[in-house]
Image 1 (cartoon, rainbow, N blue to C red):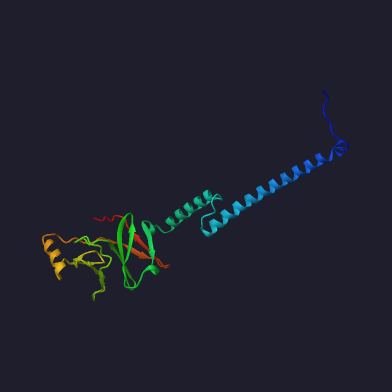
Image 2 (tube, rainbow, N blue to C red):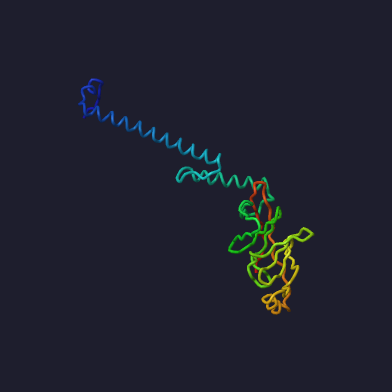
Length: 214
């Protein structure tokens, strides 16, 4: 069998249907190449935008690159400010209501944030004397300027500086007298105070390391 050969004249003499098929195939190939190039540009644009703005990319568009970028940024920030290690953002200053304590939960444990003026303190959620929630406790600031909080049930008063017991079960009411009688032989126990800090942007951070809640 001889080798097949084609010439310009033989191509020109081809039926019109063959020409149409060739043109359609050429258009499809060009369209596919254009679609692939647009897709690559869209992915690259999306990743670059997300890295610059520090926002998560759309699903399926550079999420692996975004995740790697976020991890690298976190490492860079830790190396830049090692003092922030162990600090957890829990709320913002704008979330506080004047005159009201704020309850938060971290790692299934409760804490109470107390804000009075520019002072911000955090204490374990329950009174160490009667185990009652201290969220509604009265906050006062004596002449020495140190904040303290009083348990709303047994009226035990704690320093918000170091958690020391300032007044233990004072028996200044019928219910308080009953609780104080039961606790006469018990040893007062200091409350757990959690370190706090506030950023210039008003973000509130707590450091929960080495804090044990009974």
